[in-house]
Structure formats: C-alpha cells, structure tokens
Image (cartoon, rainbow, N blue to C red; front, side):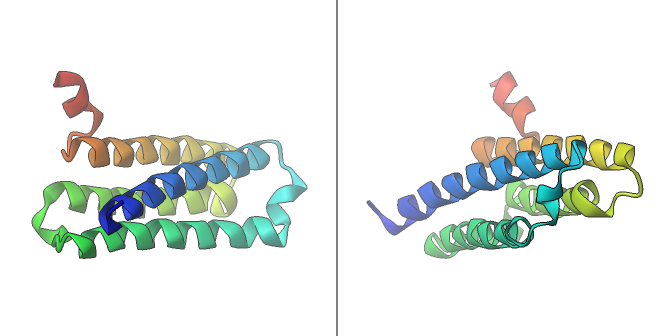
Length: 132
C-alpha cells in the first residue's frame, strides 16, 4: 500500500474516531454527566484530533498539493475552524445548556459538510453528490 493510501485510511479512521468521541461527549454534555470532567476525556480528543489533522497534512505533502490553490480544501479548512469553535461552545463554553445543545447540533452539521466536501471535492458538499 502506498504512503498516500495509508495516510488516507488513517485519516478516515481518525475522522470516525473523532466524530464518535464528539458524539459521546455531546451526549454526556446533554445528560450533564461527570464523565466530561475526567482528565482522559479532556486530553484524548486533542491527541486524536492532532493525529487526524497530521494525516490530512501528510496526504497534502505526499502528493505535493497546495491547499490554497484548491477551493474545496479551503472550504474544508474553514469548516474545520467552524467545527472546532462550535465544538468548544458545545462541550464547555456555551453560556447555557440550550446554547450548548444548539452548538452541538451545528457542529455535527458542520462535520457532515466537511465530509461531503472531502468526498466530492466540491464546496457544494453533499449537494454536489446528490445532483451527480
């Protein structure tokens, strides 16, 4: 298997792991679980997300792709920044439970947009996929 395909596989795995972890932490936020305050719960997402980002950057380096020359990659990066901001509000910075739940739902929608952009290589994300 080539380096690129290995990085791509790892990137997809880390995407699934990071999304799963975020969904679990979002559930814990909704039910106000003490699990959110545990050290491992606060540290593990940073490790997983770093590996997720590193594999994405590794793919770009491997194929010598300038992300600034590709609108779809810029859309993924913009979506990533929005996802991180919404995730922070959802898990710990939201002023109320209602705000945190709304940010959680918006973060999930943003993640879905990012996945759609990655699969279609279009800023239209899933719209491009559905219209063929």
